[in-house]
Length: 458
Image (cartoon, rainbow, N blue to C red; front, side, top):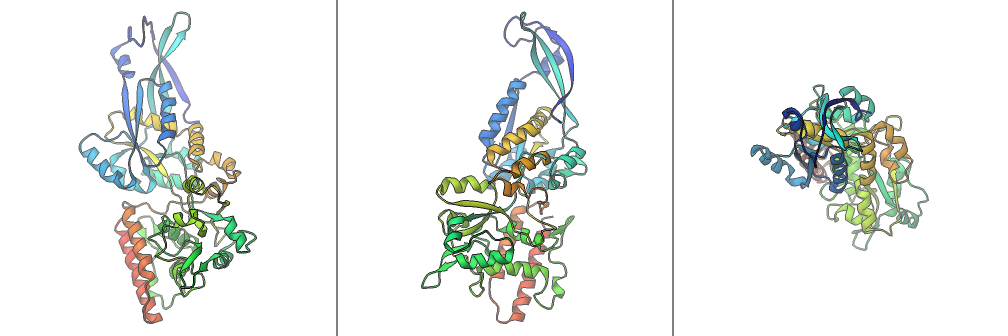
């Protein structure tokens, strides 16, 4: 266990008369236990869980205080940039894994070990205290590669240095309303994409004007589906399309020479957008519909694609729903694909206390604390040793089952621009053309342009 103390070196015997005195200590020893205040920014709604871990840490090292602040997703980048410019930035940041390359130059890679001092009572009768220094080892590159699920090593290790550690993991799964399936005469959840489309058709209902009043699934658009970009990427991955190779975007490779629509990228995007095309049998959603999650909790959507963090939201907003969850269906069960979506805890390069900052990250990223944290926030663990236990959980299992093969598909420097590019691509693909030839030409250009936009962020 990497959090274990490798060595305890007795520096001195401290005879105290009252309180937390420093009598008998050298200047160096006094400095090792001086008060340290760390600022920790998090975006995810996990402040309560982090504060519990911070309290536990301060019991071990009372001289260290961790101040945790939640920062809005949309304001993080500006606040972080301005804070660093003014030299008032945080010591630790919890950042989305897709922000890591953008912020790499602002971060400090993990050291081999940290050294932390603490006072302990050596003699209960006399109350004599000892100053002990712990040498705490951090995970090395080999540990990350062997003990975390696959995507973590590919994400957090840059130039053989570790720039962050995760406390949880997430994957796309399919939430479904069992009552809607029952009413449509669907006895069992679908086992493949063909049966999924058939079930969507059975659950989708229209009014006399042709407007959708109940959707089999929320798919096909971008503006009203929160995870649209990831869902599209997941379909690409399942279709065997390599979205990127190293720093080169490749999902549009060879498209310009295509003579018809029978090419993987067009097939995948057609499959997705057909759910929002009135002329297609799969039609069950459109750009006029409200937010997909809102419609699902209102009982107006059969299948909803989301992450484990959606679970508590759905349960709180629709406690009476007969909610079920299943892993994402696969095109090729022998080579399954899914999207990894998670946060990593990193130390800021300008931190005035990098030793203490990395030691706290080490502490909260220990297997014991990861297990506690993941359970509290209802997310899969990023540690291989904890996956099997979570797979047995009825509700968490569908997400945990997929973490071993899930991949973070984007390692560029501006995911917001990519998200916008994918959204525009879907919106433009849904627009009609006069002829099939015009449609093919239009769609090829849209996809090629999108790939070029994404390439600019790498």
